[in-house]
Image (cartoon, rainbow, N blue to C red; front, side, top):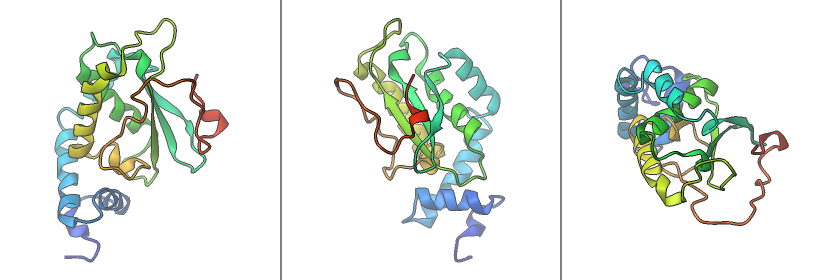
Length: 184
């Protein structure tokens, strides 16, 4: 076996191998299982057609590319106030990799910062944050099996972490977000 485990990732580019190794740095076996899992998922539920159809079902501003963080990572913003529980949660979950695919190529080593904003806005459904738990749970499960978000994320946790689940006053953007990456 090659020192980097390249033979455990047949057909993968060096950058893809590095992404999977970064996602599971302590286990080559676990890292190498992510690749065939994603390929299988991409040929079924995660096909470009299924992802695009799901994205067409939800508000286009629910999850979207939203500028660049100061560390150079691309920002994906989820606006929880736009979540409509009458729409199948799977459509919301599949919209996330659809957006991710639009801004990060599979053979890229670009990183993504995921921001989740659950503040209410006038005219939006504004569900209580716990209403979104099924979305968070399924998105985390998807990232653990297909490694769509985690392998490209800038975080160190093993699953996407909804950072703003409580009720807060006005929030200021963290210092690592560029002014062009502020929420609209």
